[in-house]
Image 1: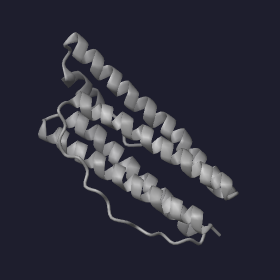
Image 2: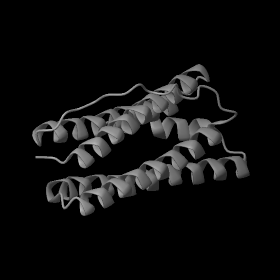
Image 3: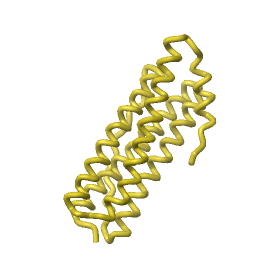
Image 4: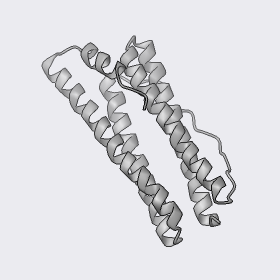
Length: 164
């Protein structure tokens, strides 16, 4: 059985993951509007991953005899000034998600919830990858801006990313 404290914390995380999904979908729409289909594809892949993360928490709560309690999502931002600004916001958002996962892991430690600790290890590993990818895109965009190279090259590269 999952404790009420752990259940409540994981329900909060479901909300955060679904908000991430919603935010990334908004970013995808922004890129579509700017005629950057590769960047839009990148954000759609990110959106799908965040939704999957929410469902991992959802299923974990249910498997442990808990109750999922969904909450309203805040409206995401819809306008940015540049591609770099979006990428920087993704990087900052992923860092925020990482901090949330770490706090959730701390709760699992305090609750002595060993199954949750094991499950959260997957998320900790996933967040290392997410932060690395976002930081790399920010760095690439800064190089592109510094050297006047076309954003279209990076857009094309992002369009080839698989949805695994």
